[in-house]
Image (cartoon, rainbow, N blue to C red; front, side, top):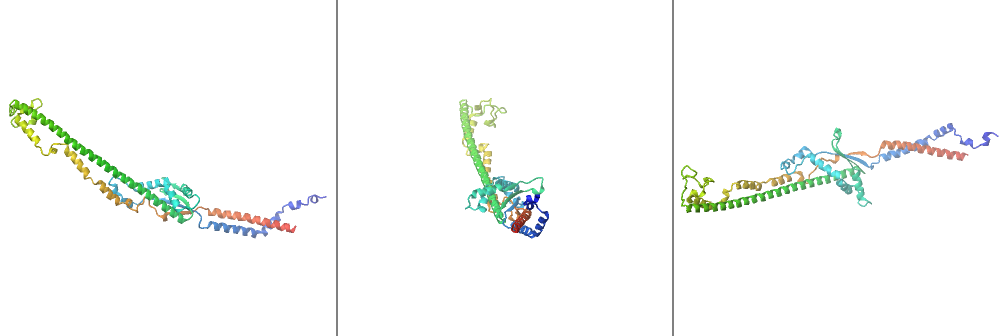
Length: 365
C-alpha cells in the first residue's frame, strides 16, 4: 500500500500556491470592492464636520491708544494701569481656572447631565495655558489651547472666558483704587487731627508761659515799688538805658532794676493782647499744613480721572481679544484614518475571499 493510500486526507492538507494565486486573482474584485468600501467609510468619517475641534488663541496686550486712556489716572499716583500689568492680571485669573470652570458650565455643559460640575472642571483642567517662550519669536504671547465639539462652541466659551476675566480684573482694580482712596482719606484725617491737636497744645503752652511770665513780672514790679525804683536804676550805656526794653535785661541783673513803670507797662501790654495767636511762632507752620490738607483736591481729581477711564465703563478690556483670531484644527488624524481604512478593508476583503473559497470547495466536495 502506497503512502498516499495510507493517508488520503493529506492530499487536502497540502497548499497549492498556484491554485491560491488563481483564486486570489479570480476574487480580486471582492478584495478591491471591500477595500474601496472601507476607504469610503473611513473618508466619510474623517470628513464628518462635527468632530471635536482643537482651538488655539493668543492673548495680546491692549493697544497703546487704549493704554493712553489711563495716563491721567496714572498721574494721580493712586493706581498704575499699564498694558503689561493688565495682561498679567488677566493671566493670573486664568491660572486660578475659576473663570474657565464657570464659562464651561455656562456654555458647554448640559445642566441636566449626570455631573455637569465635574464636566466643567474637566474642561478647565484639560485647557492648556502656554507661557511665552523668550527664545522663540513666534511664541512671544500667552496661548490658550482647548478642545470643543464645534467651532461655535469654542468661540462661545472663549468669549465667555474673556468676559469673566475682564470682569474679575476690573473688579480687582476698582477695589484697589477704592482702598487707596480710603487709605488716603484716613491718613489725611489723622494728619488733620494731629495738626489741630498740635495747634491746641501750642496755644495751651502759650497760655501757661504767659501766666508764668505775668506772675514773674508782677513780682518784679512789687519789688521795684518796694525799692521805690520808678525808672531803671542803671546808668546810660550800661545794661539798661533810658530807651532799653525790659527784655534786654541780662540774667545776672535783678529784673526789678528796670523800674516798676516799665514792668507794669509790659504787664499791661501782655494782658491787652487781643489775638494771642499772633505771638505763637509755630502756629504759622501748623496753620499752613492744615490749610494744605484741607485744600488738597487729589482725591476728587483721582475720582474724576478714574471715571474717564474704561475701568468705570462696560467697555473695559484687560486683553486684546477678537474671536476671529481663534485658530482651529482637527483633533483626528485624517491620513491615519485613511491608511487604517485601506488596511482594514484589504484584510476584510481577504477574509471574505477565503470564506467564499472555503464554502465553494465544501460544496464541490
